[in-house]
Figure 1 (tube, rainbow, N blue to C red):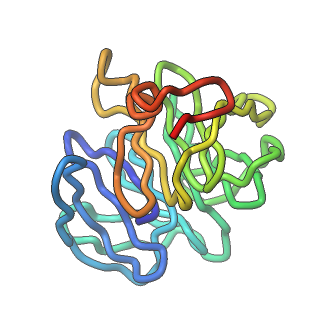
Figure 2: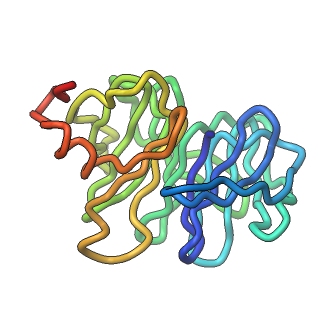
Amino acid sequence: MQGLAWVGSTLYGGSGSTGNLYAIDPGSSLSYIGSGSYGIGALAYDGSTLYGGGGAFFTVNPSNGSQTLIKSGVYIEAMEYYNGTLYGGNGSGQFFTIDTSTGNISNIGPGTYGINGLAVSNGIMYGANSTALFSIDLTTGTQTYIGDTGIGFVGALAGPMAPEPISSILFLTGSAVLAGRGYLKKRGFKKGKVKG
């Protein structure tokens, strides 16, 4: 599963290889919605439109999975909409903004870690990849290491769907969907390390 985004109370996820869109119940199930022409490496919702990214930037219809191309030839592995701006990242560690009408990217800065997922929780932008969870400065793109993800593959990261206290939860996808911060605390999270 790559790309996660809340649309109302529904968590959606996408397939980077097939373009399939799914509705996810983090506690129990995955439901196929439909498919589009482009692999879904990232998803973000701005309150009215669901956007998808991968090797292209496009809109996604959450009712049937159909896609409308905005721009091809862009490399987006992670997206998050926050305070009126769509942010993106990629496996090279680039952190950028995306113009939702044109798909044009404006670089903010490179980071130390590749970015496979982005999410905001409690006003902080978080990024994740297969090995690290980190915060990202929205002005410079500087990444601050928080800890090991504890899983071998992170395909996406999703923030909260509701205000506090639920907003302290981040969802990661790998081979399963699990609650990030709450999970890390239960596992004995220490700065820079998760106890197994």
